[in-house]
Image 1 (spheres, rainbow, N blue to C red):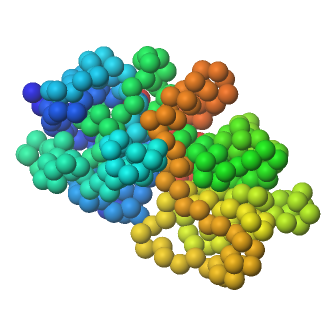
Image 2: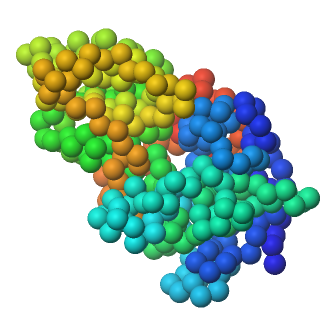
Image 3: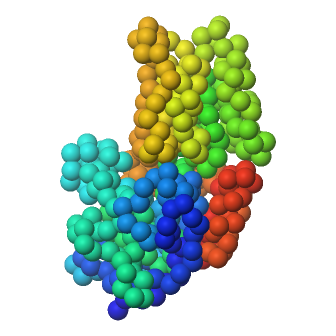
Length: 374
């Protein structure tokens, strides 16, 4: 039987989240219905609210980070049982397309449906609805800003236990995206000098990743003192309020060459941010662009000659080049071993009704990461 759930939805953009009752469908084959324990309040969800990212269908239940307990399992869905603990992954992994077969599950062909709102196998079918039958979209095929959600098993990773579900939601996006941006996309090597531009929920994990990869100088850049202080506690060796200061320092320790890697993890990326990152790196250096830009942002003020003459590389990344089906459990082991910090990332957990306050706190620089605890 379909059930009723309270959820934070976006009805129009720009606007704010509205907490409303939604109907959650019964699970079909290869679907599970999950009681959500905790959800992460990522900047990407805020992009949906402002319209910087365009929803394929409104209203939409947002939220793409989360953990929960399986409540019901669709027919002919082997390997899953009521009571299983899960963490959501915001890009489904079909396991069959060219990208999944190559181990690049972050590029799974089902990623094309992330903002569509409907089921990826039926464009006329939605997992959520309002009481009057109006279809409600589902962000990233997850919709974790709901007490209960319905997802494909391709969007979930089974956890070995239900321990720490109030923290492990971080592994579903922010940790993997930031950590992977430094370790995989930037290919940080021991001895490198790395600049991380923007040390919020994703950038703080790029700091951790650069530290784990052996960078000798991890330079955090953020105008917010709270975030700079947090970065210094989680692996940064230096922290500055501006890119000019960071780039000057990088040149001072590299005989004027510049950083080996620069990772752009600001909340709203502009072409100018990309240009600053490229300017800060040495010959043969890499600028990784992780943060999300508005759809309307199209220009990058960079001289093509600079790219050619100095062999610099601009590297885009989604999910930090990560392979979530493998990396999430690996990062869970790192957390249990004390190598990866999660508890220290969470500034505050909010009830669902306070979601808009949580996002105001994020935008105003009072949070490293905020989450919703159901």
